[in-house]
Image 1 (cartoon, one colour):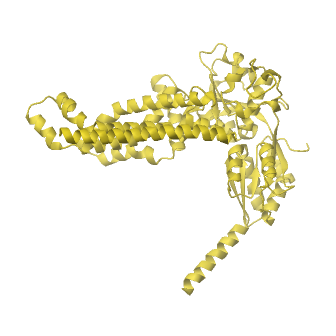
Image 2: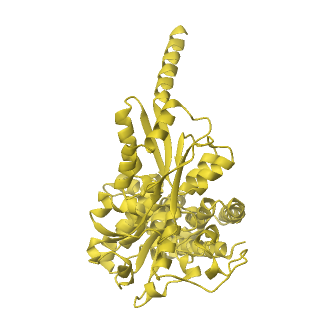
Image 3: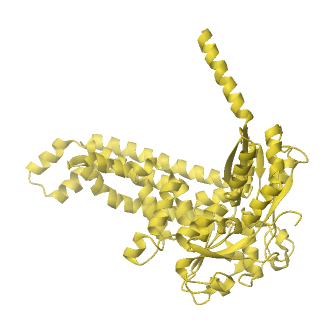
Amino acid sequence: MRGVFAVLSILLALSLASAQGRVRAVAASDLQYALAEVAQAFERRNPGVRVELLFGSSGKLYTQLTQGLEADLFFSAERLYPELLEQKGLAEPKTRRPYALGRMAIWTHKDLGLEPGPAALKNPKVTQIALANPVHAPYGRAAVTLLERLGLLKRKDLTLPGSSKPFPLLSWEEIPWERLTGGVEAYWDAGPLRRGKPRFDFVYGENISQTAQLALTSTRVGLLALSLAVHESLSGPGRYWTAPLGSHMALEQDYVILKGRKRPEVLAFHAFVGSPEARAIFRRYGFLLPGE
Amino acid sequence: MDPLFWTALRLSLEVALWASALLLLLGLPLAWALAFHRFPGKPLVEAVFLLPLVLPPTVLGFYLLLFLGPEGPWTRLTGVSWAFRFEGLVFASILFSLPFALTAYREAFLGLDRNLLEVARTLGVPRWKVWARVVLPLVWPGLLSGTLLAFAHTLGEFGVVLMVGGSIPGKTQMVSIYLYDLVQALRFREAAEAASVLLLLSLAILAAARVLEAKGRAWRSTTA
């Protein structure tokens, strides 16, 4: 009996010790590569602390966090979800901060032999374009607004249910994205993209990294996060064009510490994300940085 | 209810209908062979057909996407890519519902009284007549319940169709994906409504399968 107790207490001590040196962050999937590198740099500077990362779409992670998903920090692809967590009292007050501004890229597979850019999308070889689902994915919304700004999508003359203004008069922020479940072409006319093609489809990814996977393996054209397009897994087999600043809905990305998780190592990682070293990594992955 | 829900539901029903009908055509000879024929490597073949049951659906979906995509073997063979198309969804659904249907069909065949088949054969009844008069009347409850199970399974499948379908509303967005998108958009109330319709429908299908099966069994015992 004493032996069992001894073993149990050793196990308990071990698990406490390992919990002390562990930071668990959940993050939007556009951070797949960049945040992994930031975490590595942090671990190098803080031996004994391990950073565990879990990626998914911001909306899904938000829902999971409200239902008790274990995490210390949440990196969202937009401001909305960390704000909602704050309102629900699930985040530590005054820890919400912007860490980056996301940018969009038009990515094309080298096999297509097209110069990546807006004109490439009109090429008859492009019969499918992958984008994240604008109903819930911030990068999907950025993709649609980018195509709109490029003159490749035109809003249809309709008024959305529950909306007082006609659809064409809504600002990007006023669009009730979460209600646009009919697909882009139910609300936008894709004439310039369809012209001269036997068929044309938008293909929707569940989050931005699944979208990248769809583009890479199948559609060969995608509207992706620049932070993914610059990574060798996509820049190797394909090429990309970076959308100019302000040509799409802003992707202001915030992060926050979750309620009751202000342990020293969590605070240290929170601070490290704003350090010059981490900012350099984010910059390398094509993010714009707050205050620049 | 959002009209798009009905669009997604109809698409799911169409995919499930096609998949389960084709599954019946393909699965019958396959199940017959597995039930009654011996051949080298049979356990391995059986294991291969059960694989879709244990592979993570997204993994299966990813490789199906590679298989059906513009660079995939299927496209090279036939000249058309089935990725993000109705045909691709049906193809994928057949594959991942195969273990369900196959197991049910095989059980139904194994439950046949071999003596009846022997008797029919010794009486010189032609093979097609044995099937029509003896085999089918005895096994149809099993076949039907297997097919309905495959149908219901296709209705609820998520991981595979997420990968292969590409979630195009009205074209490849099946009801399970539609529901998921609603939840992602934090529209929980509408998601719950849609989910309850789906739940009732699935319950009705499964209950129908059971009732038909019981009826068949009762009928079989009076004729045998």
